[in-house]
Image (tube, rainbow, N blue to C red):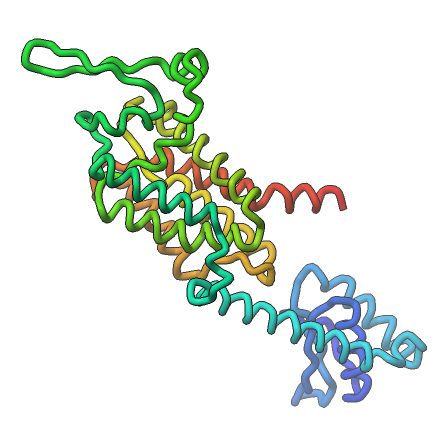
Length: 312
């Protein structure tokens, strides 16, 4: 907050502060003990030049008709600000308590993704490693097992052959349903429930489906094609979860009153977890999938806003 000048009389100072508020310029006025005048402070640096120009015009002609009903109009502005603040409070409460409200279960795709993941976990016995044949149809590419004496080896089919030549396009998405252990699936399903349910409820099932598909395909391709191992033995909803987190975090910053957002503490937790996974302290993790998913989610959140801003 920066001071732009002062006004001798308290009534004039209050009227000018109200006038600035009607222009969308946040401000405050307060008495200066040293001079007895009323100092005018502006909240944002971007408004300083405009506010200073308005102050000069006001001091030159404080009886100008445009200042006459500033107090009444400012009262309307403050009332709208209070209503917006109340909506933000209600939205935040809805996010925290949504799963205790019946309408919050109206998220069929979120529930379906959780259900499929649980069924796949049961079928694969929470194992998508080298020896898990049950996971083979869901891997990003086909593999063939070959016997070499008393050992079993594998041949990994090229991605293009599996996806294009053999028309197995589902493999671009299905690795998200594979999980390695109970903590892995529990962590992912809880975040999917919270973040996915929030997005589907607010933005609709079709938008949510597009977001899930985009983050799943991008994170799976990224993990298989960009990681140093190039192994098909990976899986998990984490890439999608980080994509959902990226979208929710971006939307919360752009439109805090829109009902889509995440607390500062949970956002820090997700970013810290992303970094910890990269350290290798918790073992092998699909870090590329996490990072690519996050970037896709951020893009979904920020690009429409950036385009609208450019068009304006």
